[in-house]
Every structure is written in C-alpha cells, then in structure tokens.
Length: 143
Image (cartoon, rainbow, N blue to C red; front, side, top):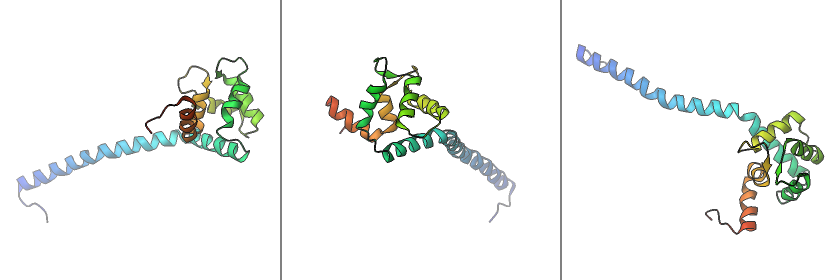
C-alpha cells in the first residue's frame, strides 16, 4: 500500500523523516552506554580478576579490614599509593605494578589520593561491605 495523491506522499515523507529522528535518540543513548562500558571494561575486569585471585588465595572479605590496618604504615586510616602497592605485592595477587596503580585509582572514589578501608571494601566486595559494616555500626542500609 502506498499513497497516490500529493498530500498523501508529503505526509508519508514527513512521517518517514520523523520516525528516523525518533529512533535516533534511543539508539544514541544505547550506543553511548555501550561505549562507556567498553571504555571501562579493563577496570571492571581488573577488579573482578583481583577479587577472584584473593578468594583463590584464601582471603575473605573479613580479612580485608585487618590487612588494610596492617599496611596503613602512617596510621591515618587511608592507604596511599605506595602502601596499596605494598599490600598488593605482599598478598601476591599477581597483578603488575601498573595494574595496581590503576586499581588504586579505581578504588579512590573521592580522588583524595588515599583509599579508606570502606572505599576498598565497597569497591572490591560490595555485598560483603554491606554485611560487615552493617554489623559493625548497627546501621540497617534499608534492610
């Protein structure tokens, strides 16, 4: 079925243009989300790999606060880059120093140059983070 009159052809042409523009918006949103995920894939894979290696080495989320405090040499409650790289090297997680630096930047969510114990746990063990810190503080986190 196709329009045969000039007004019908004009309306059909306008509808074609409008439908192309209408579909361009969701496609661009989807494309942007995919490109952001693709750009962030290395960080996501690095965190997943680190979490898996820690579990394979026998470390649990409950061990992390103790280890964190042990490697906080200046006792300020944050691990700086050097302290974090020492932690990763001592634990023999098996990641390169450049990857440890990248992981540090991923954990440093507020960009202050240090990782707090809570930033570390929230990034690496998000489910355990909620469970451990709910128990420690008596907070409910909406549960």
